[in-house]
Amino acid sequence: MEDVQTPQGSVVIIGAGTQGRRLAHMWSSRGGTVCLIDLQEQQLQDALTYVEQLRADATDHEGNWGQVEIAQPSSLQSTLKDAWLVVECVPENLELKRKLITQLDDLASEGTIIASNSSSYGIFEIIQGMSLKNSKRVMSAHCSIEIMGHKDSDPKLIDLVLKQCKEHGFSPFHVKKDSIGYIYNRIWAAIKRETLLTLSEGVATPQEIDAIFKDVLKTPKGPCEQMDVVGLDVVLDIENHYAESRSGIPTEPRDYLREMIQGGINVDLDTFLHYFHYICSLEEAKYITNESAFRFAWSFSIIGLVVEFVVAIDEARVRFTDDAQHFFVLFFKL
Image (tube, rainbow, N blue to C red; front, side, top):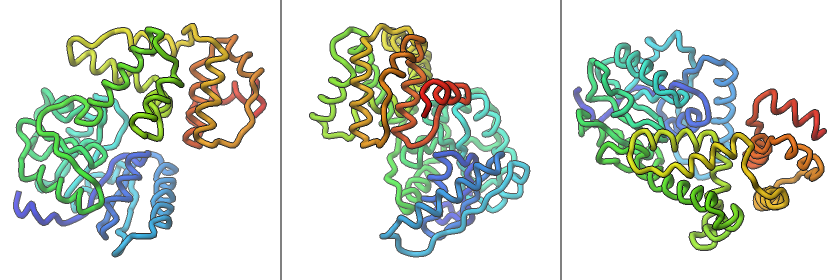
């Protein structure tokens, strides 16, 4: 690869979901062209609206915004012709990511860097056992903040991506060795695991853990609140991945999560209601709770759906399935 210190061309982002559209905003902040690719046209239109809103809110931006183009997967090959960087932001499915990385390695020009935005799988896991034309240009770029290569990565390309991320407003860090969870998520995983272990042992309640955590570290959210935002099913998937990859991971946190997700955990209802009000008051959500409805729901063991409802309020968007939404409309009359 020649002249790697002066990348020319566009940044291609595959997947116009939450992460993809955020990356599109940042990578276009210095005038460069970004092409967003997604199978769903509505997802692409929503992404453009999201980027425009972020730009409208950016009062301290200097210089010109770059163009954000949209395309379907059918035009991937032509879109990649002028790209210096392509980032996959598809769902956290290992086989899907492997197929996409293989396709990108086949279609992208020799000078295009290929990066994975995966939070659960490092690039060394994704490409394990794969035969790529040029594995030296493949790396992890989680949110363009944590940059991690693998044993065959070209150090010059790692340095280039770190430099470009910084110039585009990110605060990048170099993960110097293969690491499941990169840097931050490894530390955060330990906090989540000990939180769940503390809860499973009955040492403290969720609201007590959140309160002491925020009091000591001055964070806006405690670990229980943050896990609610992420989603307990996602937390469990991540914990399962750690357990599959390492020895000595305790089973109690995963068992506790499974019981919560399945709705079989034995928690005092008044405590749960108190925690529900506690979360919503912190977020200053404006709504009316129906305690009798929650007691009815509790009797049918739908704690998982209630947790998802809390998350929806917290993120100001609907996150549950059609069946769950129908249940709430029918029984809660919201």
